[in-house]
Image 1 (cartoon, rainbow, N blue to C red):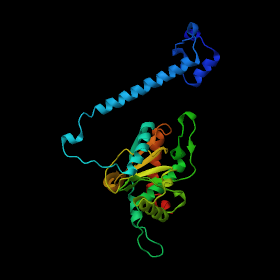
Image 2 (image 1 turned 45 degrees about the horizontal axis):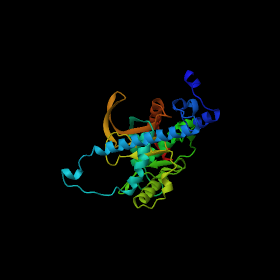
Image 3 (image 1 turned 90 degrees about the horizontal axis):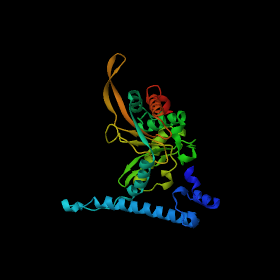
Image 4 (image 1 turned 60 degrees about the horizontal axis):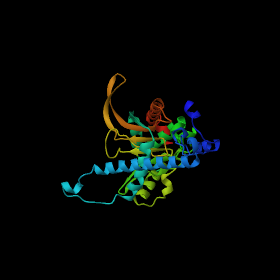
Length: 308
């Protein structure tokens, strides 16, 4: 308070400083008796911005100077263009990783009964086996979980506003591996579709991505994303949230494990999952409950209901 009394200026200049976000106590006045003018505030902000830009320039130079040698100094190299899809995705991934406080919850789900049910699925008219991927059941299970945990189906556009957008739709993103790079189209209104419709749509949008025939609008407006490595391998990983969503579910390769169940060791099919979530809106307890809900939805009691 004592420092404030020593500042000589007019209320209009004080208001001008506040509007520009300048700390008037740090500004030296050049008018008579050290009075601060609007020109002093403008010069102060100009010098601050100049100093900030110089620091950034120095940081960039220091970063570049670390590469004292070229890669070719150590052997033969080949220079290629980064695929366009990966270049576009890079900025979104960087923004997501730098701005969202990621936490990843790892868990395992017993899908033994679900897999037995899925493999035995037959067409009611022809009696032929129906090939449905596990991803279809996972999408159905996710929709049920999103209904119980609406914060996972939300977006934070501005944390300072104190508000979040809760989505009433269920558009599930699926990560599609293509030769052009990873693409994440949305399966729209997944809550309204049965497993056959979902299976057909997954194949359709995947084919459009691989042939670059999908509308770019289909990469936006999602609820949550599924990134599946089940067909490739691995146990757990840390998927990056697909901004502006607040969560992403990573699926790894299922395997047979001996589990002690009902006083005996049994061979069960276990699916590893990795749920990354935005810690600004979702806490660890809620994430654990969400994963428990997925366990219930993919367990033996829900396999048939999910197929409807």
